[in-house]
Length: 210
Image 1: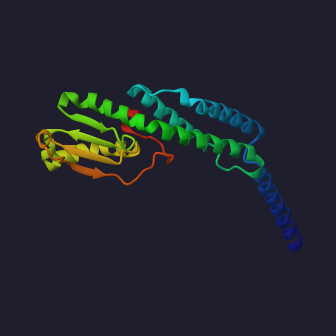
Image 2 (image 1 turned 30 degrees about the horizontal axis):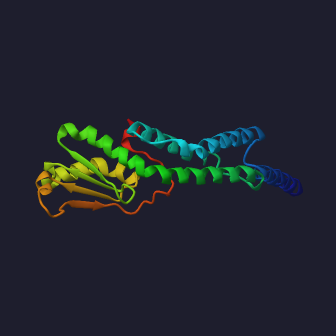
């Protein structure tokens, strides 16, 4: 009875080991691997030719963010890649590198046109929005008389800060119109912790969610 039980356990373990070995040979079924590799190559060609795409409006900037989000979503679709899938891993890395390069290239223009979008959206409320043309467009200035009150300033800050941080702004400056009459450059500022333009990330900003 004991010997028979031991035999059953041994056979069961052997089956489990074979199953595990079978799984680690490749993380893809042949059809899945072929499909994913084909899609990766298509994305590679798209991203590789993206240099020709110009950003000349907020609409084109927004579309670029949508493209970046799609590429970053697609790249890790199959994470468990084994040695047998090395060709897929190489292609994934190429797509990731190209995507980061396009992000680095386009973010300054995206920030510029995001500033124009905010300026148009807030102009009826007497806000002034300026993107300083230095530091890769990483500094934004908001001007409004309500900023003389701390609570109003904090409320406004909380509505814009997350989007600005994700887009890679490094500083927000708050002014009111009386300060603009001064010869001295005076403002209240908020600095973000550094988020480099070449750091991969999802651009989950509010305007893309609406």
